[in-house]
Every structure is written in C-alpha cells, then in structure tokens.
Length: 382
Image 1 (cartoon, rainbow, N blue to C red):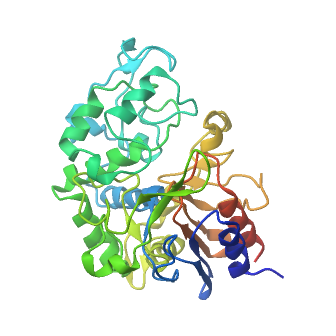
Image 2 (cartoon, rainbow, N blue to C red):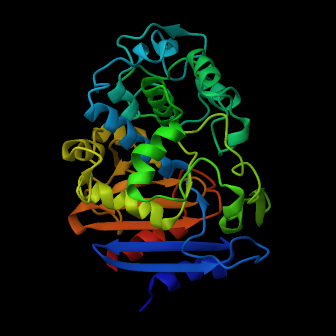
C-alpha cells in the first residue's frame, strides 16, 4: 500500500516538481516525507526543515493576527476600516463588474474589518480575469505571482489601491487575495508597528516558529528552495533562486502571500488552531475567535460564483472551509488554504489533524494541481 513518501515521489519521478515535503499529524502521531531535491540541479536533498515561500497559506496567519486585535478590543468586526485606513473610507464601485473602470457609483456601506477577514471588501480577483477593473490590480498593485521586491511600501500601496474601484459593493460577494493584503496594512496601522514585528512577537515567538518571516537571513539560505514555473513549451524554468527576492526584507510585507516558513513552523500554528487558540497554559486567541476563523461564511451562490478559486468550498477568515464532501479528499470542517508557489496547509478539527505539503513549482492557474489532490486524497484515507 502506498505511503506518503510514495505519493510525493510519484510526482517527483514524473518531473512535475524537483522535490516536495509532506506532513500529516493526528494528535501526536506524525508522518513526514521529504523527497527529491531543493533545486533542479540537485544541489541538496529536500529535508524536513527546508524553507519554502508560503504564498497564500500566509493568509490564515494574518487573519489570526487580526482576530487577536479583535480579542483585545482594539478593533471590532463591525468597525469601518476607514478609521485606520482613511484612503479606503470613500471608495468608488464599478456600476457592474463588467463596467469600465471609470463607470462608478458610491458605496452603499463602508468596508468593515469583517469584510476584510471574509474577503468580501469588494477589492480582489473574481473568477473572470478579463473584467476591465481587474487590470489595475496587476499593473498598479503587482498582484499575481509573488514578487516582493517590486511592490511599493504600505502607504504608497494603499494610496494606489484607493484609486482602483471596487468590483462590487462591500459585503456583497467574495473576491480573492487583496483583502488579506489590506489586513496586513490594517494591523500595522492599528498597532503602530511593522506587520512582521507584530507577527513575530504575538505568533511566531510564542509558537516557536523560528523559521517564519518575510525574508530568509543569509545563514539560512542553504535551506531555502528554489522556485520554478512551467514554461510555455513545458519544462520548469527558474522563477526565483534561493538568494533572490526573498533574501532581503521587502518594502511591502504581504499579508496575502509574503511569508517563508517550514513544515514544523506551520504545524505549530495549525496545532494552536486545533487547540482553539491555546498553547500550553497560554492563550493566543479566544476559542470563539478560532471558530469564527474556521467556519464557512459564504452562501452556496457565493461559493459557486468563486468558480475555480474555491471549487465549491466555503471560506472562513483567511482560509477555505470544506462544507460538503464534493471530492474524495473533502472532509466537512477542514480549514486552510493553498499557495500559488505550490504549498497547501489545512487543519481538520473533527480528526485533530494537520496536513501540510510544500513544493516549489508555481501553480499554473486557480485549479488545484494533481500533486495537491493526490496528497489530500492520501491524507484523507491515511
């Protein structure tokens, strides 16, 4: 019978990825596999402590940080974000999603903290990338495949965002990605501290996440994987080397996808969520806050409108939530997400499970790649 090592090795053998690491933890029982190499040249074997660009599995971490501020009463879910982000206090909204970017109407309600957490702010990517108001998200905000050294600092980024109309009224539907970046700016504005500093003190240090940050220091670069994408004619092409864009701190620490980390660091975060916010005798989050994060907030119509982004799954705060077993790997209540750099991280409270798989090849679109699907199916049946 195939095990985790076999599941990952099959894809390395097919050449779809140079290497991958996977981890399945049920309580204290942990199965781990590291296969292949950190780069195409075979410079070093993949290892349990190899460092990866997390991409969008950064989102649950940043959502948890926002909920910490809610727990402390520094912000409330119903608060309009314009108090801390005045640039976003009076946005314009395109008349219809298909309207030209200059055909706008006023908002019917303000953007709230809860809208950001649930990706319902009106800013973000729809399933149809051809809509006119989508283009500025890429050209002005550098959204898309992560490129941390090209994104402007938070104040300039937010000013640019304020000039781009919302695709729909705040609260009226789910859109991908940008709400999480706004959460990162919100945390910095509310606390008066850089996002990375707040995350380090309040999440990484208490959980022992010693390898998680927005950049990789020089003394850890030997553990950092290279990052690839598939070229037009097939084959893998280098998108970022170990000493590339993540080897120095970015001007804009992306709450949507900027962190680098390891399997064991994200495992510590996942176990904290499974413990409903507790870490030993410490409490990082209220149990109710974790439940809000890990509960679906979307209607069936909103899930269907998300198309390939969610493939029928729901969305909590910062991550997806399985609401019905539509696939062999679906487990109702499973919470987490995927990263466009080839990462996936989930918790399943009903089985006390954390499932993680990190690879280093960019997803070619919003549909989940075969490696992820095979890993999820193995994890569901293991």
